[in-house]
Figure 1 (cartoon, one colour):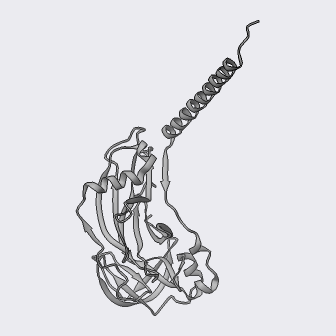
Figure 2 (cartoon, one colour):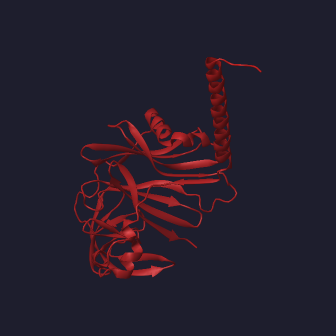
Figure 3 (cartoon, rainbow, N blue to C red):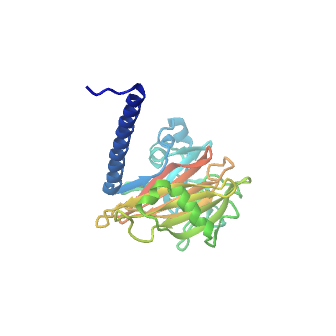
Length: 292
């Protein structure tokens, strides 16, 4: 019978252990790669459901937030209220003062004349008549609701670095980036931001495309994905959204700017509102305008 010294036995056991670990790592790697290859759709957005869970008292006193004529939600005492909850409960559906803004400036104070439901959406007729520019209306009538330096700026090389950082492991799906637009603004006096609308240049490693919105914080040298969508099913893209940045404004009056984005899909348009919470943007309201 062959005998081993204690040292040789330990060495042999160590080799066996290392071999097992390497095999497990290989299996894990194959499974992970397979998951990446087979993934058809990815949608990433961090969101809160507080707007749908407010009390009846809050909803009762809430006033509408409007994009064009679509009610995307409501506000009461700095709290968000979903459009459905507002429509079902609020007493403020007519003769309500609202502050109206176009993309970059105030249009003045107007009134909500009436509120109605159509095709699973809630709309408002207002005394503000506008057929050219998209507008935003909020019950917060402060003249400085909108951040004055929210402007579109020239694309810079560092913006591509911000996008790549924000994508993280998602770069595996497509390492090409096309930046469509970059905006500059402030969340508050101490927090400048760049908001980047981006997409992929071509089909990625696994045959898909992506697009999304990145928020970069130059003072912190970091960036985050606010919205992101990837699809490999290019023949069936009814629900694949194209994102755009609409407004940066202190909508709820808490002293910090909120972000409004738009998703254009084949059969509907979605407006999302993000609140800056604990160092990042979280979606607090989302409303879909059905087009068919």
